[in-house]
Image 1 (cartoon, rainbow, N blue to C red):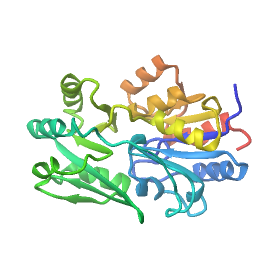
Image 2 (cartoon, rainbow, N blue to C red; image 1 turned 30 degrees about the horizontal axis):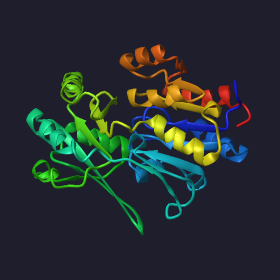
Image 3 (tube, rainbow, N blue to C red; image 1 turned 90 degrees about the horizontal axis):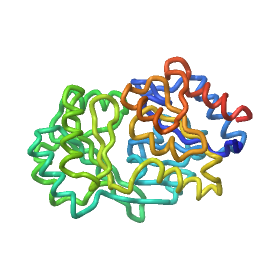
Image 4 (cartoon, one colour; image 1 turned 90 degrees about the vertical axis):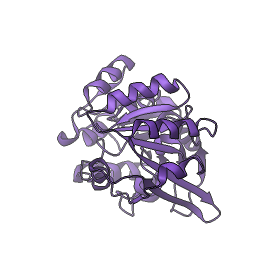
Length: 285
């Protein structure tokens, strides 16, 4: 097994608890990684600003960022210094059909606006209805979600975003997910996240793409990377990495899929699964 030179990790449910907090042990483990010169990458479904928000000022500049499940990938540095390594938005020819599906299904959704210009990134989350699932997402991630009741009728005229989020709730998630797979096949990349959400990206987007881009920027082989996650959307990254580790708190569907893909497992988040994984596989970090 190659020595680990890059550690990539998901945030919610992997490093952060349901209140968006990381343990003291995890913070210290990340600081040891930074001091050892091991490259680090936060690769999550969050937008760029909320991907960086949980980290202290001493850690933030050392992090590569894969946001929107890898649709936007940025290098290290202060926020106005980061280079854009990769960008992939929802396909323009399929976006109107997706908007129609959302409208016909009556599902609460979030349009993840992300625009780039010479001054940097401008981001906002827009939703058509304030629901319990929206409030839960705000509580967990701290993201500001703007209510726009006419969003569905406006959406066709908007630039395709890097990601859309559907919030059918836990009772309907599997039903809506299967209907989307039947309707769209390979036209979009669909991922279950949390227990109530479906995230939709370009079919070529996944966290493995972000991991490859970041490894390339760091001059690190994939075989020298460790990836840690807890969700269905983490599986491509876990499979691509030299070592892929699924958190013990992952849901049963994800655990079954991860086992079939050969991912390893660790303790749950509440039992310090993240910091123990770093100690296990990067002992000098």
